[in-house]
Every structure is written in structure tokens, then in C-alpha cells.
Length: 348
Ligand code: NAD
Ligand code: TYD
Image (cartoon, rainbow, N blue to C red; front, side, top):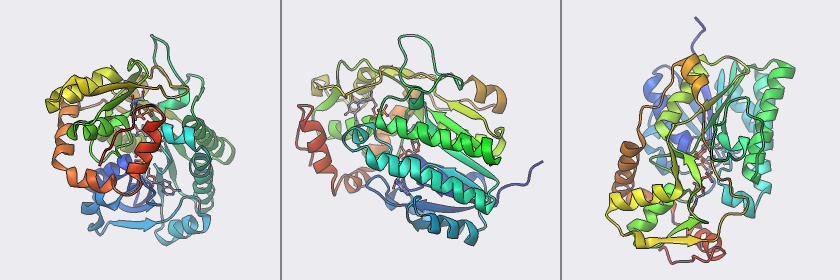
């Protein structure tokens, strides 16, 4: 039996998945201490983890994963023995209009963490990656761990580069690493630039719902808590140097998802607007999650129909959170991004 981890550095723990993960870990691992390093970019928000901030086993530090002195200091100060790395620039559309910060954060930030982890003798490094590194599928098939990497967007290219560095640190220096590659997540606390919370927010305001292209692009949706449980399972029991795909076996077209949201809210489908497509838009993602199921016994627990209903209810109940994260630059972002698609609409 391996020794349990006592002090884990979680990066990006004020973001959507990282924040849900911190909350889950505080509940599930009652002896683990968490150091949460997050730069609080537009996507990071302390309002998403207010309950966790009061927990004495959780220390929040505002700072960048690209700051090697800070990372080295935290690893030493807190005697960190594991790293779970979520922090990233995560939105494909932003990567198309401004790719540089994606390389700075996703590539250079990951390199900084790997270097300092190696120097500090951290026992395990988990890289939270994405199925988007595999590129796009045709009508059939699904991504396996040995599917060739073929990223199409600046976002997925930067995540692929980071995954290669993680592999190189394992292969060259013997650092204990694991990589998870998950499909699209949905659930509480997701920033409303991503499709599901954006559509819920617009529908709540009776604003147009901007569907890219023909709306028949397919994503394999997974509830964020299922993703968090899978990450903890891989971190705790995955084999060193391995990659684990994570997916919900829940393929939907974007149009189906949007219609489902409108149905739950009792809003008319006439709110749907087909707008100019995303350049280089990946057509279909689907995950073969057989390896994590066979080796680690993980299966998704939340069916999409129940998960999306709960998620819509969560946003309805937490409109103050939504208003808070959508204040600041969000309005400008929305106008900039959607005017060029021919769908600018006031969203205040
Ligand atoms: P998010 O954008 O909601 O959160 C990212 C967090 O990282 C924010 O809190 C932000 O402040 C922080 N951050 C950004 N730059 C930083 C820096 N330089 N230093 C420290 N913190 C920084 O993203 P998310 O959706 O929660 O995604 C988390 C991870 O999961 C990412 O690595 C992403 O690639 C991966 N992923 C996401 C999905 C999805 O559907 N959202 C699916 C698969 C994998
Ligand atoms: P998104 O949530 O940005 O995730 P990703 O691009 O990483 O899969 O988008 C999910 C899907 O929804 C994708 O096919 C693009 C589409 N989409 C829209 O049709 N309209 C929108 O306003 C957004 C943000 C996304």
C-alpha cells in the first residue's frame, strides 16, 4: 500500500473544474491539505470556492504557474508531495483571436511546474488534458489513448505541447506523471463563455442563442463531478507514465443541447440564431473510456438528462454568481466575439 498524499498543489483551483475538484477533495480526502495556486484571470473567481476558503486544510495563493520562484517556494513551504494541474487558458474561441497567452500559460506554465516538481522531488504530477488533442472525428469511431495527436486549434495545440512535455519528463527524468484526457464538461460554476452556461444565461434573458454553423457538431458531454472523481481515481491509483481518457458516453449535437436547455426553461426555439461558424471548428469528439473503466473501475455516475436539468436549476438559483462573473470585461468580450459572427446582442 502506497503512502497517502499529505499535501497537494492544485493549480487553477478557482476555475470551473479546479474549483469543483477542490471542493470534492476536501470532502473525500479528510487528511489531505490543498495549496490552491490560481492567477485569478477572467476565468478564475473566488466566489466559486467561497465555502472552501474557510477550510483550514485549504490555502489559496494568488499567483501564476509561470512564476518559478513562487512555485518552488510553495512546494517547499507546504512540503507538497503531489501536483494536480488544471490551470490553463481554456477557451478555443479566445485562442483563435489571441493564441500567445495560451502558449505562455499552457506550455510555459506546465514546463515551470514540471521543472520545479522534479527539483522538489514531488511524488506524482497529474496533467489535466483534453480530448481536443486528438483532433476531430468523422461520423464513426472514438478517441483511444493511442489515437495519434492531431490538434487543430491554438488551444488544443498548446495542450498537446504540454502533454508532450509531461511525457518527456517521465521518460527522460523518471518523474511520476499521469495524464487525463477528458471530453467536454458541464455543471455548476462554468464561465459563461462556454456553450452550455452561455446558452442558459442568454435564454434566461430572452436573448438570442448563437449556434455556430449548422449546429450539428458533436460533443461527448460529461458532468464536472464525474470528471473530478475520475481525476482523483487516476491520481490515486493510475499507473505512472500512463494516459487515461475520460468521457461520458453521451454524444449530442450542439443543436440538441440548446433545444434541451430551452425545453427545461420553457423558452421558445425561436431564440436560436445560426451564426458564422468558428474557424477550423472540430466536427465531432467521442471518447473511448474503456481503459479507465477496466483498470480503475471508474464509470460516469450522472446521466446527461438528469445532469443538464440540475445544471440549469443551479444557474437559475445562482444568478448572483452568474451576474458577478459576467460583470467586468464579459460584455465587451461578448460584443467583440459575437459581432464578428453577425450575432451581437445586448446582454446586460
Ligand atoms: P477555466 O478557464 O474555467 O479555469 C482555468 C483556471 O486557471 C482559472 O481559475 C484561471 O484563473 C487559472 N489560470 C489561468 N492562467 C493561470 C496562470 N498562469 N497561473 C495560475 N492560474 C491560471 O478552465 P476549466 O474549464 O476549469 O479547465 C481546467 C482544465 O481542464 C484545463 O487544463 C482544461 O484544458 C482542461 N479541460 C477542460 C474541459 C472543459 O470542458 N472545460 C474538458 C477537458 C479538459
Ligand atoms: P465550447 O463550450 O466552446 O467547447 P469546445 O469548443 O472546447 O468544444 O463549445 C462547445 C460546442 O458549442 C462547440 O462545437 C462550439 C459550439 N458553440 C456554439 O455553437 N455557440 C457558442 O456560442 C459557443 C461558445 C460554442
